[in-house]
Length: 503
Image 1 (cartoon, rainbow, N blue to C red):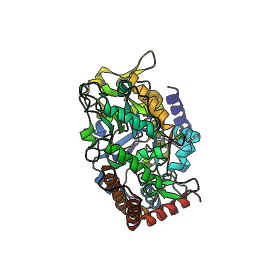
Image 2 (image 1 turned 90 degrees about the horizontal axis):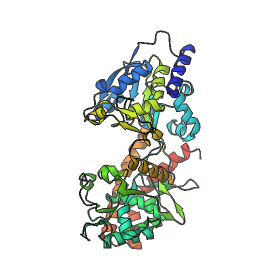
Image 3 (image 1 turned 180 degrees about the vertical axis):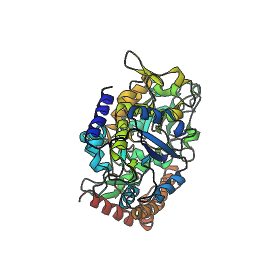
Image 4 (image 1 turned 90 degrees about the vertical axis):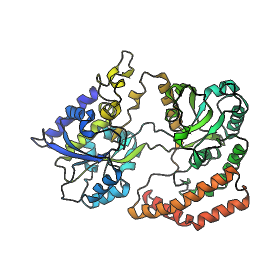
């Protein structure tokens, strides 16, 4: 309540400072954006009505449910034309931000943030990385971000019942994990009387397996890149230790420790919806265990902390702490300060909770112990998430309000959130998030398509035993990467990194 009062006082200050023109109350703005969530209709969604009640800002809503249509709309905007005032769930790329600013389509928001976005500005003052992430190389800011306090990572979840039945502790190194997986294989770990139905390690293709590189000191981004302390851009699959990872994975597969369907299955095939089925996976990769398994299994799986390499536990930070390009203001807008103040409420608890859970005492209630729960009407409404919340689909502006969500009256969820928070403390960014021009993005995407295919196919061949892991096969692999443009790929990224990191 204090934050809401503060926000109202801020509006009053803006008005007295002339940032909100006289007679602004009752004006209408056009808000356009992308939201493909099935059955969600913005004009019928309670979020926008509640935000209007709280702020007095009214929007005419224009929802695009087709990504191609939204991309076409963004490309068609020109300065001086009849455009929306606000782009919400905008999904603006770095080069779109720069191009739309250059064309006079978007407003540079940097001069407005401290005055018009006090909640966001307070976060920026506490974390310099936020400002760095949303600022273009030339110093302009085209759009507001979504800020996740504890991003979801692609982690290993280990079955603690399996550990108890096999008498094992949670592993902390590659060798310890190997020993645990063997115990899961050789024991009726799920206790159903069938000693052969356990899957020691579940995974989905080369993508998941590359995360295990952290056990060998290897961490890379989706482009397989990392940067050394000296500022050199390197390619993880071309590293010597990558072959050690491949050798270890090949041995796992040969011993039956890896899911035999790991290279052919999908998340749909891995997903279990019947809580009465036997738990087969000892360890499995997923951002959240509930994305694959029933909520009833939530307390049976725990987040496995990163494995140590040379005494240090580090893991790839894949979940974005700052998601760029979520909210922008066009030059058609009559009052930049007012619409930014509307968006800034989403960086306060009131707006964030409204967007993700709904309205207090309508969609949720807070009990005497400080925990909260959904109301019976919300739980009984199969359309609740699409008609009262706005967070699914494309990213919204705002933040994750995890202090509030951790008080949900579900002890299993609280335990999981605490584990993910601890896990995030071990995560590092292997390569900074840099802005690309449209031309750079096009060329890099073409090279990545070829290089990524070669890497993923070679991982499968080596792990499945279709090709022996030898010094010669390793050299042939690197040669194939070079023929596909690895040197150009690295040179492009090195130049971008040097230019934007001030080297």
